[in-house]
Amino acid sequence: MAKPQKTAITPTRAENYPDWYQQVIKGADMAENSPVRGCMVIKPWGYAIWERIQGALDRRFKATGHENAYFPLLIPLRFIEKEAAHVEGFAKEMAVVTHHRLVEKDGRLVPDAPLEEPLIIRPTSETIIGEAFSNWIRSYRDLPVLINQWANVMRWEMRPRLFLRTSEFLWQEGHTAHADEADARAETMRMLEVYREVAEDVLAMPVICGEKPEFERFPGAVNTYCIEAMMQDGKALQAGTSHYLGQNFARAANIRFQTEAGDWAHCHTTSWGVSTRLIGALIMTHADDDGLRLPPALAPAQVIVLPILRSEEDKAAVMPFAEELARAIGSQIFNGEPIRVKLDTRDYPAPEKRWEWVRKGAPVILEVGPRDIENRTAAMARRDRMGEKKAILPDSEIVMRMGGYLAEIQGTLLAEARTFAKARTRTDIRDRQSFEAFFAGEAEDSFSSDLGFVRAPWCGESSTEAMLKALKVTIRCLPFDQPARLGPCVLTGKPATAEAIFAKAY
Image (cartoon, helix red, strand yellow):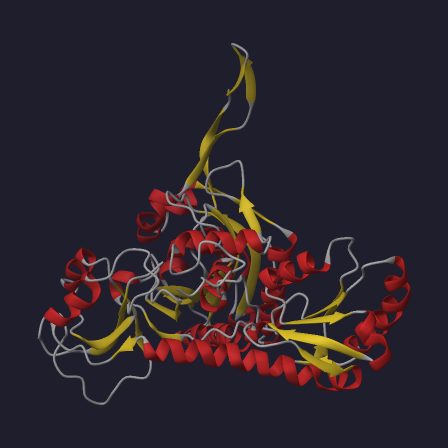
């Protein structure tokens, strides 16, 4: 009987997918649960990944004319009440501040002074930013207003999971105001394209772009658009959303401007956002049973130079060469930036450090030992080829070709994810019986299964929501690339109005 292959992460994906996910985060030292249930501590490696995502997005936001600003964490309840659909959509998730002072009573600190008006810890900022816009905007000359905020938000979460669902999480939220509908709609689609580009070009995560059906829209929006990604267990994850809000929030917040003709009109507004949930998506798109695998465009450290030092004599001989190699690689360019190299000189055994960097997902690990000095070589291991033997290469080749190696790894991870998503998307299911059999037969939290997406015609009727809910399935989006002919709805048999992506989801 073959001996089971040892992995750096236990349990494996096949053994227990939810626990594997948590162990990848622990093994990569990315985050941990905080003393407050539902909240997390993001550790330096996890936060460095978030900073790389931030940077990729922020550059694109500013290139399209947006400016960063900051708005209050606390929102007066009366602001939330102005938009009825918004209140209904977020009411169960809102955290409320009701007191402003503590006093000691019977040996304990207790709230003492009630606020005249309760304050909501922001679940999102449409209402508070709308209030600001109503003060800023007076004339058509003031438009468009293009604002982005990097912030934290609070949405009370009953079933927390690190990076995927936490009560407090980090995100960006864009909010814009426009003179006319066409301009606002163009903005909505422009920002969705920014999200798609970052997801695919930086995170190496293929996504489907489309519109949410009416019953899945953001509360108060006229249209909600999204990017949807398939995780390794076949479930969907909403990776970003962009909303055309019409004049709904503008009317509620009285965001008006004087037109060129001299009359008054309400602005058309948008909002759009992505969060630290992208890190959860990254893990479940690329990680394996040895830990995280980071696309080089995203990795905080792209190349690890690992000296093999067993004595002080080794250190004296190896370190100058290792330092020279690290400097030379760092002078090369990948993706428009100097290659990010880390020389790991910590006083730990080399195998321990090596496996730490494997678990953290470093794209390339270079080992340099005493025997490499004379030949000026290093042993190179690529994180996308863990099963292959290390390549012993001359330092000149390593330096000159490192940008190419990183580009190969970036492309490999994207291609693997695309191949997987295509293979697990069913387009042949065309009747309700087959649809129910496909989704009903899958165990919750299963990894080694055929669960995936079903792309099929849909009639657009809200009555189908109950059918889907019984199967714990949702319509992820109506893809932009619709076929010329549709056929009957997979759920009702009635004439379809669009093709939809159906899936179980996070």
